[in-house]
Image 1 (spheres, rainbow over the protein chains, first blue to last red):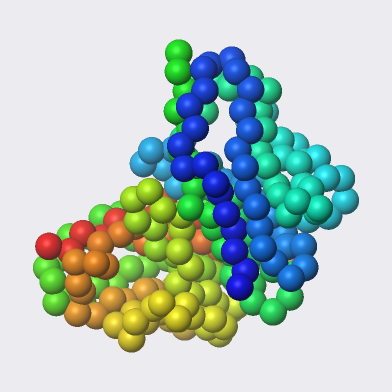
Image 2 (cartoon, each protein chain N blue to C red):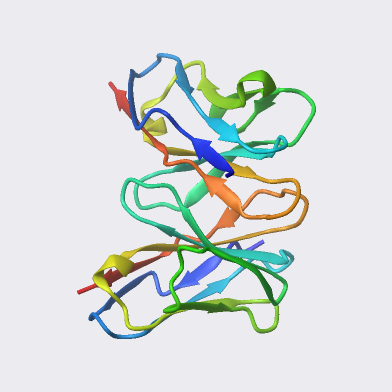
Length: 114
Length: 113
């Protein structure tokens, strides 16, 4: 069955530190991959997407993600975290054939220490 | 692009009542999705439409849930005989084709008392 896994439920980092959020997918073929952010009381906002080509993808707010086919991973990174990055982050995938539903991971809640 | 609009923002209802939510997608998007999100969880797929056709419905969705998109524009999600377990945020999203990203509305928060 198709699935998206985010192994870390909570992550705490200090402001200015680097960040990496993990995402693994299980699909028959490489899906389209996305990262979304959800701040308290807000809707989900797209950070970045991967379709094909360059495996390092740049997004908004200084985020980037790296696609690794061999590890079925699409990890989100940021070199220096700001207090405003505290939010919940969701990885999602969309198959390239058959069903066109988007499958989301359970999310990683990021806490930023001042 | 006025974004995805959902109404109402909040709905409180008594157990056993019926509720209906509305979603207006981005006008040029032909795919419309409904998701449910509970606290601490990711969005859970409910159903999606391409134009007016409902192409997939989650097996987790009971017969009390029904969705329509009559003219391929706005969509409604109805829950009949609500139960306390239906309390959640109901999210609507729309997209173009070809793996385009989902654009989400702000959701309708349902509380069943």
